Image 1 (cartoon, rainbow, N blue to C red):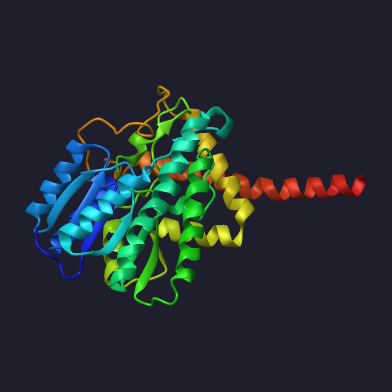
Image 2: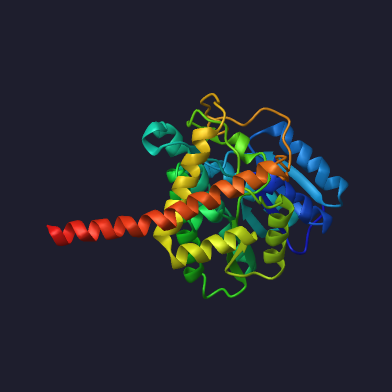
Length: 330
């Protein structure tokens, strides 16, 4: 493997979805890649793809919940490519269902992956950044770190915590102007992630309409490596949702709840599953999940969400008025 002037690009969760797309994007730039995921076979597929695309890559099967394993990954990346220039925290998981109906072990696994895994990555990468005096840490967080996510409470808690961690860490690194901490907030992405999620609802899951292509998120990560910024939201729906929640949080939260419950009420039944929380998913893996469809199904879903939002907007003010009248009468 060559010594790279810019050091290694380390990407966690590189076997599918956003991580795999991001690895491919960096490979097209000829980057030196140290990739990790729990599943060895799918990880090696990504490594071979990246080499074909012009990158220098190797893979290390790693569970990011294990801090020693993450440190070992960092050490191998630095020794192989002469340092670490970019670290992308991306490996993630989630549990979908009413909070009290999801096993506590599933909540713990979600937080350990989505929060502790990111802390482990940053802790492993920073000594190499500080030694070089430069580096870019990119945290792929999710729109769930900006907007409350019903039926995925522990996921939203972990993602929101990562945002706070990134903001706090950025302050501590203020004396090192060439070390950057960046956050990416994608809207729902067309990846296999929805198939991989632990599902305790008893209903088949699918993402919200207007999913973002994983290549769009990968391009955002690549852009941050070139020109670091504090944070970026990927997808127009994510940007609109963030703005709407800032303006009218109760209305947006009610619309999300009603829309989610309306979808689950009519969705097909599905077996309860732990997904990939405790073990890697079986092969094969892929970048996309096949969710970028058009036509009546998307239109129906959009109309359903719009109707839920309309009902929320109509119902909540009446609820407030009723509550105010009750307090006045009391």
